[in-house]
Image 1: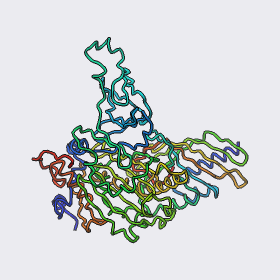
Image 2 (image 1 turned 120 degrees about the vertical axis):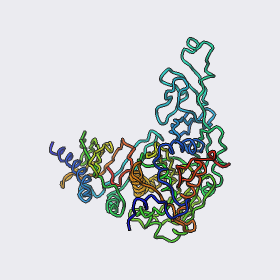
Image 3 (image 1 turned 90 degrees about the vertical axis):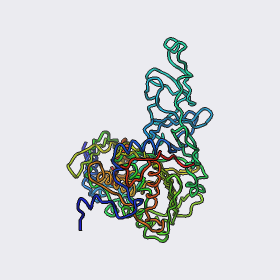
Image 4 (image 1 turned 120 degrees about the horizontal axis):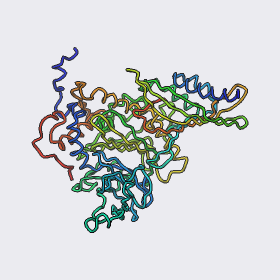
Length: 151
Length: 405
């Protein structure tokens, strides 16, 4: 049970770190071999699509380049619920529900921005669980003017 | 010195061809007129042939004029388009955005249609209609459809329109050498933004806004050849932009686009802007197609497609997808910046904000920061609407012009 709560806390901490745009804290939760992917099925073209695919270095670059870009500054808040944790040896596959809310800076109105599942592969070890892989399986495909910061 | 109200209202100190009245982005009556005069008689990209590869494959398309369409491949492999409106009680016939339907059956009363637009079954026809109304009276409304220019499916709901090749003229010649191999859509998404559709097309029609894109500044604007890229204008409001060698590896996290495109020089980048709201954007390894679908004076849906070659190996395709996503994906570096910029325009120019003028005054010998692309668009806008975009309140004395043949 303690292992499960450690894994759940890892998922929740990853959301909090991204919410706070503390990208170093997010990457600290990730294994050196971390891979991040955003996938989504398009009923329009009837195809699986990949919307983002980076290794840890790629994610780091994505984050460090952010200040050079013009981005929307509305805060994003992730609400995750861990559904299942399947431990197999030194790894666990964790499936969570994710809702992302966006709050307008001017006036503070909050809207549901996106719905997805997080399918995480978590490496278990002495130093505590680390994210080895995250697949953000998007349900929402219409993101308005979008965001530079992934889910 | 800041402007007074009178200064703010005064037309810009440019020729009237070099600015527009911002009411063209907000006025509901102008918008309604645009749907009739600009969109209904124009050829519009509905989808790509790879989306409907097999017989009876269909794809729904919301035509910019408002008409819901079914694009369907027939038993004879010909692509046809029909109103997605049942001729019986006006119901939607097909609901899913894509699929395969040997028969298209309206769920309401089970009237069925084939992929050639014929009504093939009216439930309890004889009992209700006797000999007063038959299947032959209940065909679907067909819309002119052509496939071409990279395998795209074009539709025109004006039965009196000329052929697609006359509408495009030679505007697509610049891309013809790169449209030889069959292509395939690998990406689709739709962004809905509170802005006017023309503001999106404007963004695709000028590169001065590269200042908003760090990626484009570092890989393009700061590299040799950038300021030699030129605009060329074509009849019917179309325009093209010449190529340069984009230095993709100058952006940290990007890399040279080794997968390339047949016949295209390394780092090559051509654009074709088609009136009234479509853009071909071939950037080294990926073709992107934008189709603007106006939803209201201050609301637009933009459909984005990313295409590779049908012959791609999995590795090549993965590389194209990566290249696409780096700048053009929903989390890409450039797309968000472009959408944010036009969202900002929509916010500042929505009805009641007292926005007055939008300036298209840059002249740089038709090179990359010249605003000739937008001026050319608005010249066509004025021709079709019967008055200048700089003075849209003036009543037209001329009948609206059609697309030139």
